[in-house]
Structure formats: structure tokens, C-alpha cells
Image 1 (tube, rainbow, N blue to C red):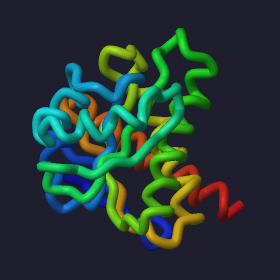
Image 2: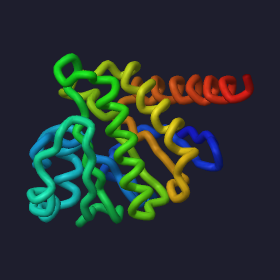
Image 3: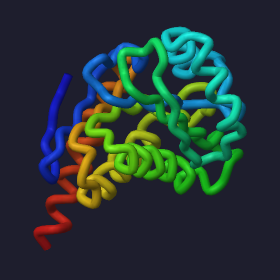
Length: 186
């Protein structure tokens, strides 16, 4: 796990299972529109949370690309699950803006609910086909843009399933922080 500091917050990249982040107050589900269990991230979260998560989510569905909603975490070791519907690459347009909205809306829900720590998967990079490098750039830049405006959220973690994705996010986060610092210095 690699940690960086930015505007008083900790931002991390870690390889692992999004459904196994016991030190995070909230985790983010890369959800489907119906908020039902499925494959990938959403399947892992629903299996760990138990059937009550899907029951609670029925009243929150459907989601539209870029939208985020919050639920209890049920049997997960967290307090909340924030569900985001990422865009399907080259189908839901403008994909870049919709993916950024997922991160913005999730962080705003965390702020509104007094959540101090939140873990994100690589939204839209699985079956939705978003290229990991492009998705990482959007995720990192959006988090860096939003964090200085939040009073409560002080810890953000990107949880990546593969070692390749971990390396992409670590490199992208380092470059994004460097670019942010350089742009404020000039």
C-alpha cells in the first residue's frame, strides 16, 4: 500500500478486495443500474454484505450514469456503501464527465454523511470497458480537485484488484499530485 498526503488528507493506492476494507468507514460499489448483485465489484460487495443490501437498494434504483446513492453496509465491516453507476465506455457520453461525476457525487455523499474515510474501486474499468489508464487519470484528478473543498473526508483509498492496475493508479496519482502542486505554484 502506498500513501500520499494532499491538503491534509491521506490518499492511498492498495491492491485488494474492495469488500475487505475494515478500516474504511465507507466503500464504493461500482454498481449496475438496478443496484442488484452481479459480477465483479458489485458481486463481491453484495456477497459480503448479504441479501439485505439488495433489499435496501431496491428503493434506491434505478441509477443513471454518474449518479451515486448511499446505503447501510449490512454484514460488511464498514458503516456505508456508496453505489455509483459508471459510464459504459464509448456508449454513455460524455464518458469522461460521467466518470468524474461518480467520484464527485460519492465524495459529496461522504461529506454530507460525516464520513471520514472512503475506498473506491476502479469504477467502469471492468465489464464497462473503460481503459484503466484513462480511468485512473479521471479518478485521481477528480479526487484531488474535490478534496480541498471537503471538511470531513480525510482519507481516500483506491483499491485495485490487479497489480497492473495498482501500478497504473500509483503512477497516475503521483503525476496528478505533481501537476496540481506545479499549477498552484505558477
